[in-house]
Length: 290
Image 1 (tube, one colour):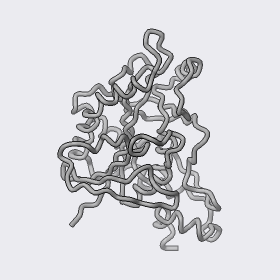
Image 2: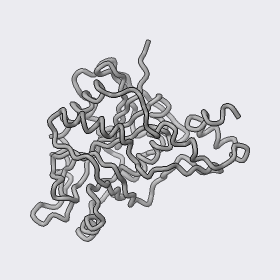
Image 3: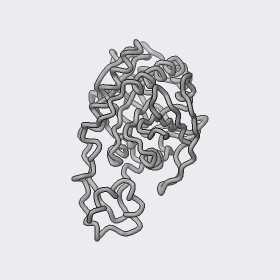
């Protein structure tokens, strides 16, 4: 009997090129929101079935604004995923968060403006709560796994998501620091918000690659700088994922699993049939007895 896949990793395609990954499959999935960024790779490690999705596509050809976030989260939901670990590069906005360190943020400031931030609309309104956008329980377990690898990890902090694909100006970077933001990246939003709407626990392993452009004694961030630091961090990320898969508490006691219970405001009879069918994977359990 095939074990259900309940844990997913969203990050670079190199993450699933690891020793010990067995029974590997490649899944081509279509969704009502289009195709995901790439085929979803599933495999077994530490006795757990894990899914991997390359956020920017195989070969990194999709910009942060072009990532099909809705399709990615919907596709993972269709596989029965209950938890997502996002692995991403970020810039540091604080002296103590040095390149090579890992940050497990607990807040998001959404500074994007081009992206679809919700599954809802088209005659169906829901207001999901995201006061705490990352799953606290999963974040604690992720921190523990990173610490076991020997990596330097910081728990908590605000992740500001910018539109990209360009890096910040110095004026922007200094402004974000004045807002007490901790790290800066381009993908946390709307990924975390869509995961919450899909009632999936979501946590981020943010790899600090640079000091953005505010740090006067450091060279401004470049693509080469980011890639070099990420390459060094790949093994740490792989080891942390393996440890997390081995130690993950399968019981979900957090509020993520019923985030939509009190979020939907539109009466079922007023929802267009096509919209209701489109979102049945997400909301069907709340309407099946009506």
